[in-house]
Image 1 (spheres, rainbow, N blue to C red):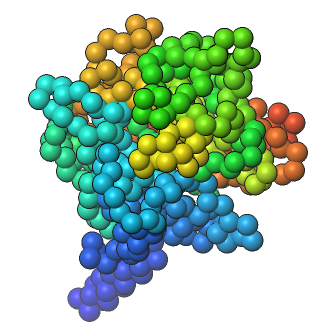
Image 2 (cartoon, one colour):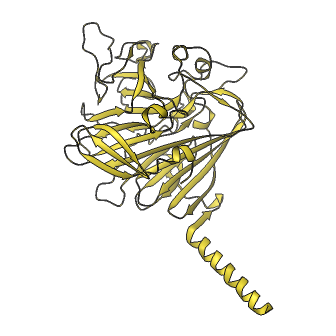
Image 3 (spheres, one colour):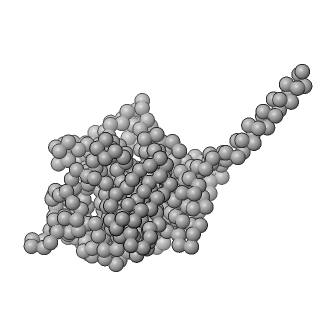
Length: 416
């Protein structure tokens, strides 16, 4: 009997070991796949469909190669043009690795000290070193984890970047521990832009209203120039007032446009309860045959800030050569930082939260989804998104439909 029991226990252990070996693999911190990419040491995570690099300094995610198993891979994210040049002193730490998408806290310039706290632009987390915590695979999900501890306001942020086999989608989860007080935060997704005008078509999920930045975003004294009317409020991306009297409104659904200018706007999303699904943003690259999308819970990230950079800055390190588009999903007052976002402002007066309350006893997680979809000829631009179990259908203005596997339920559950 004892021999039989021992045999059964051994068999159970063997089955458990085999199951574990087939469903999960991990590597220790000293086994991280590290590669220098565009001058920055970066952690790498891959599936057959996607290769993702995230910088050790600042946690900036780029390059990302989607559809890497196809004849036409896609790399949608921006990498700042000074990355492969001789290093120089930068005006802010965030500019050192500047690329792709990165999680910001406090989001914005942070030019003012608040309650004894002085944060760099977009927070410490975007310009200092993150610690690699491991890569694991569980079933069809591969997850890279990294963390950082902050000092201006003490706490820890843990970043999880997950890829699912067979999908061209990135699932991000940033968990904030130990912080107390209100703070603006969000994702700073930045796309590379072509030079040909009007070839990128932008469509957002329903929004309450949009506003151009009320202050001076492009200061001519600093050799910076803007084209949109400051402080204008509007309800259509296709009709945004410009700064010049007598000129027609700007159509921000078709970019790039107005070369030589840099502008900032903010859209305030409708809530999930009204739209019956996630808030979303799409950028269709008509000539390249794909669209980029982001999905979020508007109860967590209630706005999208557009940083429209079309060769409009001529100081160091921009030097008039920067062409990119930030589609930055945030809860914030534009990009002004902690002080402006935590006091009364033009948005809070209209019932729009511009900061999130953090509690040291209760971690806060920000779940976010980005991805790429190949589109057929004649797709033109997105009209709407339809959400089904584990999938999203992208419906175009010309009636074409493209279905993509996306576990959008992750936005609420945080689980894959």
